[in-house]
Length: 254
Image (cartoon, rainbow, N blue to C red):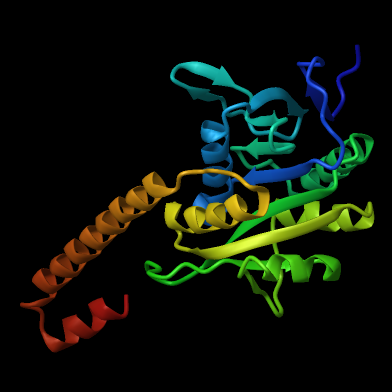
């Protein structure tokens, strides 16, 4: 049998996806908020089950496992209670062009299953360690009023990059509603950003996701980053203290 370049494999045919489901994607990106959001939802939604996975020749040679159990790197889950599909891809694809083919495949699958909308997440990279976390959206005009009702701020102008952008563009081309949610992140994993977005998803979809652990994890990461920054400053002061002005100038601008 000829192997397809990209294919959605549904392993559990006994689960029927209801019409007008929402399809949420968590991709590996800056701050890892997509991955954190998707994993938290998968862990806490009581009736969610893995129904399949995405097979692709463009996935890198990386294995994913939890508690010693191997998992497909791009998995698909479904909750009938909330009529939510969650796709989580924990590794980046090897080429940017692969996202285009993949998004087209998934949009066709979404149309076949009469999925009503696609949601992606993206971090807004901030210098240093963010202290405040707001939630922003970018959506089609018909969706803006409903998102504003949940006190989500509208992004006036900007660009979305990476796999999320490709999926949004394909969704628009295939006349599937789509929107993106953003929050501030650092270059490190930012659980607080994921937490504030999950709080909005709780209200939008009637979920009951507990975000308290994410906030605690965020504090631990932030404290660790501050500790490392302080050590770096102490090291710099110690080694520059006895330097001459000329040496100090040279070291500073190296």
